[in-house]
Amino acid sequence: MKLLVYLITLTFALNCFSQTAQLYVGTYTKGSSKGIYKADFNTKTGQLSDLKLAIPIDNPSFLTYSPDRKFLYSTNGSESGFISSYKIKEDGSLLLLTRVSSKGKGPCHISIREDGKMVAVSNYVGGNIAVYPVNDDNSLAEASQVFNQSSNDRESHAHSSLFYKDELFVADLGRNAIFQYEMQDDNYQLKCDGLVKTTGNPGPRHFKFTKDGKFFYVINEYGATITSIKRTKKGFKRIDEDNTLEPGFTEFNKCADIHISKDERFVYGSNRGENTIAVFKRNIKNGKLNKIQSISVHGDWPRNFTIDPTGKFLLVANMKTENIAVFSIDKNAGTLTYLHDFKVPEPVCLLF
Image (cartoon, rainbow, N blue to C red; front, side, top):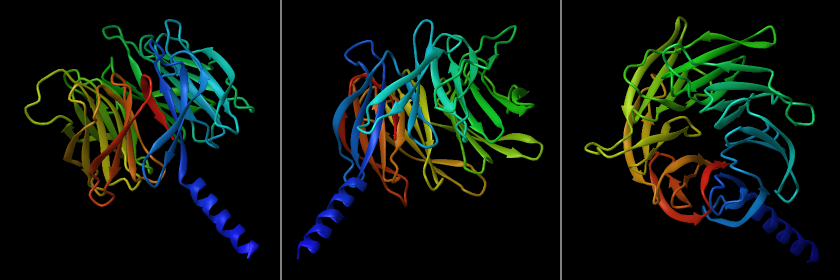
């Protein structure tokens, strides 16, 4: 009998544990926020709880994990600009390991290579990209390469970057281009300063590619569009351009973030101004998108958003209203349903 009770208790405890995912929240610290926060997320109900300060630090505006998820890295936006590495302690709090110069003003995005041995930082104001080796203890070495992407007639505003195998791609809002670097002799070398031609001033901000690297989806901050790009044997080809806004919306808007669903059948983008998430169905054969929904974020100025580890929920960081809005995802239709929100000071980045 005692064994049965023990097994039931153990099963209940394990089920409760498996239902909880840890969410880290990057913030601006201009007001009431003190740094990086953490909260518990119930993957069955979508409820957030137990908000705690993981570490006090200034303006940790973008976060990423190490591949083993035992360490965390952040940008820290300031006039000089720096980046930080942290060890994740057993209770989820963070221990600062290193704090190094970002080599430019306004660092706004940090990404890590799949093997965890390199990180890349985008400096929006400084207009450059800095690449850093990661030490064996997951601390950061000083930058090994810095790329200034400004041209004679146009200033760079690097906004995000992603590694893919031996390549590094950078979205440059100022140059209206996606840059491509390739690893050669242990250094990244510029291969292309514009994957596809752009017209006007779309302002590419964030982007995601499919797991096989064949398709890129770029959200354009000024153009309120998503550009779909296909990798071909001859290079890269623009295959689609889709508006993120509802017809007739003419007020001020800036797009922010973009994500692809776990099964790669849907693409989501955030609108700051219209204050919506735009939902697109993705043709998995030709890569083209078709907009199927536009839903209010139940807050103001949605920046980064994320999909939870189960793929059942989407969470949005509403910076100005200081709340995280939680939506359920219809896995068949891809559409969103608003559930509730959770108060967090000045949230700008969400990381599961």
